[in-house]
Picture 1 (cartoon, one colour):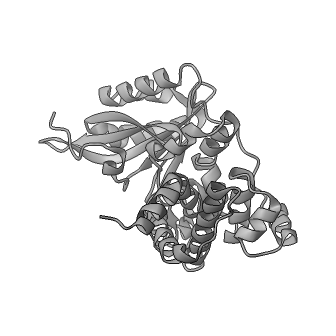
Picture 2 (spheres, one colour):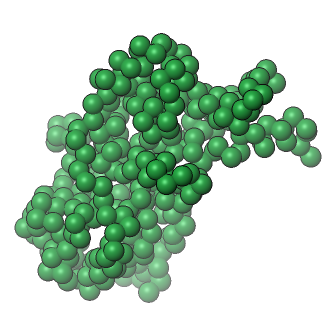
Picture 3 (cartoon, one colour):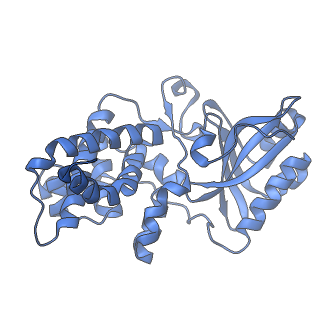
Length: 311
């Protein structure tokens, strides 16, 4: 039976595990790395719990900020010894051997956002979009942390300075330097027709209908498959790739969602069963598929997906 102290600690920190995991994922671009950092954060928090003195007038906010401080500093230490994560479209061929690849985030791990107010919920989802994450990974770690704490989590400059053990002037300076490229319009996550477009996209793959697939793509659509460095841009290049490669096989697509976007677990027929090939995440804008990222090393179990389909 847990002790009174253990029960008190668990009750205090458990409500924040989901959002702290999402924060570490944004910082690191990897769910596996984020979960390792969260484990370290919880261990350090437990070790420090006897000496922690939360504010009596706002205990919950005090505990939350304390956990973010530990987690952010663990992320910064980790980032000091590892390469940033990328997508193939963001690197040159010469860099591909040295980078680590961005990983997808199951939407189920964003369930904490359901309890936020509408404006905060929108920011939370936008901050895990693939385009935002790719841009974020190009910022130096402390600028990345300052931007997330201020612009995504809503901490004041003074609070952010406390969390990063720095000055308000340093935080403001980091934010001024943390210039992300001008974002494209937000993906059509909840727009009418997005779900139907995704359904037709999967059906076209299963039917091997390359013209139907290409017709759903934007003129400047991109298709990549990390960890493979090659990627394809434009309808013609994607069509040629599909007809000479993937569409020579039979496919099954199971719907899921990742990074706030429609996604599919893709399975290819190996002669006896459909076996996992990749997790395809679709970016939909203006009623067409703007980008497909097929994560070939995605862990299907994290998405609650089967390891094979018998028929």
